[in-house]
Image (tube, rainbow, N blue to C red; front, side, top):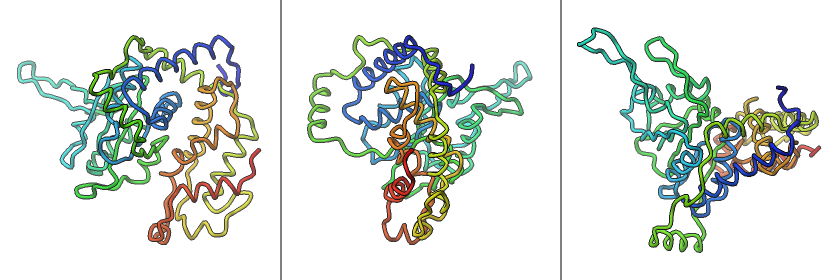
Length: 331
């Protein structure tokens, strides 16, 4: 079946809306507020991507990941990252049996539909590199044998920006593997009151809503890939990405003072895939420029490497992204 051709009938759009409605209902049954987090997780799920979540402790990151796994009837693994965590602890290992005189393979926790890497920046570079193959190739290698990961497969990694003791900076190559980086903020006072009320009443949970199946998720992913992307939208994306590199149709002369490295081509792919996922969530079979701009911070904030001057001056990546999008004409 041809991809990005826009040939999605009304029945498929109706089924998509019903499935997404059930996922959102289950999510908001367990997580109060956090609408941006819900959008990021659902969008990444549809776009076959991974999400990096950054916030201070206690903002329901783990609860959100567990709830999303519950909403799609998928298997869930939580890996608490520590400096002594080894690649075999994540991927799996071979165990020798004295009774049989042979090795047997024990698959690690990464072999699940939903994998939560809690405090990923606490694990060593060696362990982080073990996740690269899993995230990009959707497979692991144990004892020279390749094991495919389940489908769908999604990694949600969390990091705490305020604790620096015992942490390792994620390398750019790994940051680039994340489709989105969502920065969570504190809930509103009214939402915190609702959290207290629902906690006291014990009213958290999915209630009567039935979760969707992993087959339904594969349907959503396949449908999103058929959402039409016009040539003008593709050129718009390429112009945006090139502008972050100091080129593009309208280069920003001041940008090189603040940006050391612009976005890779993977950033352009992410903008398109996220645009397709957002269009499908809106009930459309085509991508608009608004779909490309809607989640620009989440797509690009972790792909831009700022200069020392920008870091010292407190120049936020979001302001640089805004400058790039303002410079490029909208189709």
